[in-house]
Length: 362
Image (cartoon, rainbow, N blue to C red; front, side, top):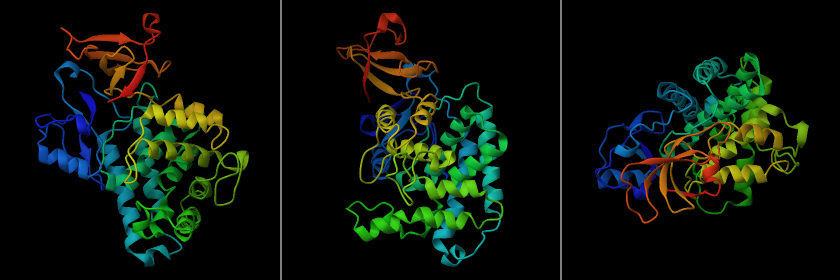
């Protein structure tokens, strides 16, 4: 299969990887043949890339870090909890939400089972979801990314659970905002900006009152917008004043936000998001944590369609965890646009291709 921008997809192409709705249910399953009506609907729903079947890349199958079943259950749990808090103001005023911590310890425990079963911990982000579901899928993505860093950091089981629950619920304070503020396209007023910023304290106050949620997990909600140089909010903390859990969640939050399409902008490529994080090292984020994070994220995920500096077009077929920026590329088009007699591969980490670079994703 290969990943393509929605504007490069045409009627007759066949979906190769399931697309999920905001609540975790299936929108379009693999094997579905696309019509122009389906393509228009995907565009309207904010889907900017899809995986399609392709005879030249049939053996290229991106492996997500967690199983579809695990993701579906996690998104459903986040969706149910967050929409309940949004729709029932009286629930928000309770000092405790029954089973909140227990539920999300179980959810993250399932995520950890999937992460621990992998031979490596290089993240190949291959999930697809509608834009309206960003809030719920984003929480799961941040938890997965944070879990990867926690494993790489050598956290024990208890620490991983604290980090994971905090990552799943870091934006729970957003449930107390008017929904129209989440995706507002126009410029925010000073009052609206102030109200949105208060979601960190709303989330902390809700989580710290839960009997089975660690106070350190609650600090992920409070501190995920603090910045390494002291320019963040709500308390302008700096450097080691920010708990490491919250720093990890902040990096995962920004990375996944950048690579996701939003109502006010297109998505960034993983490579562009990587460059942003590096540039923000020791200003917004601890540079050592940024490096650790990026050592475990595929800059060019498997099945991505890319153009090389030579003019060739190809699909990422394999990634070496020790050389994530130099993947193996299955060539599907020559510089003149013609198809090769048979697909072949360029292993960019090899010395023969030292001058060949990826210039863009397609």
